[in-house]
Length: 114
Image 1 (spheres, rainbow, N blue to C red):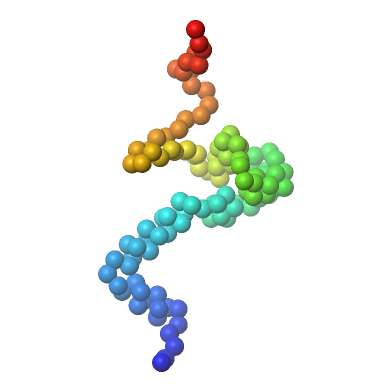
Image 2 (image 1 turned 180 degrees about the vertical axis):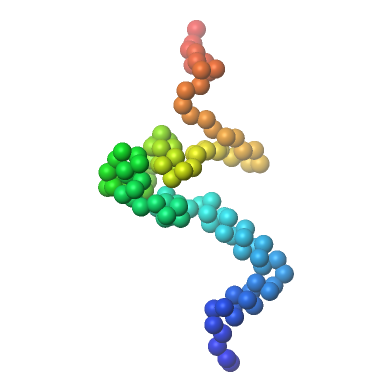
């Protein structure tokens, strides 16, 4: 049985009906689950450059990227430093809700009782 190189295998796979669409969907799903380190790498921004932009140390960026439970405000700053905007969503079955954090003047006094 003759060996095939990667290009031959890829071309064979991509010639299958729906393969290009499946690959694009898989890529989007992978990007949707990307970690902070990978996101920064994809944006081609070093830890040093991001730290300088955010006014923190490189070690603070490293600790944040590998931490298990970041604060929303810190994550928002990190994403903004990469040129993005943070959105937090909650899913309830088929329903998806965009969660908002921060100052909301229209909600002032809502938590007050009595």
